[in-house]
Image (cartoon, rainbow, N blue to C red):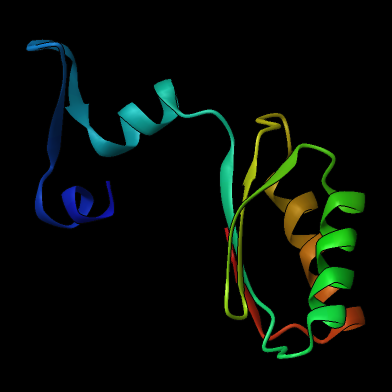
Length: 106
């Protein structure tokens, strides 16, 4: 979807050879997406520290599902679509300050 977003203003999605939806990227995301993707760059090489970060994420975001753990990057799917962005960023800033993670993106 990222590549399409960079190249096109409208996207069509086909399923079994039939158009299911057509429209601007943001419209499709608002209508069909469920939740958000959270990416955290821990900067840790110590697996114990990474596990502590994982525990904190699950404590703060009950709906968080770990999708990928590669090197020092954790990718989560936050299923709760009712989360306010201000609340999410407040919690992430607190985790960053407490745990010393490098960066995060939502």
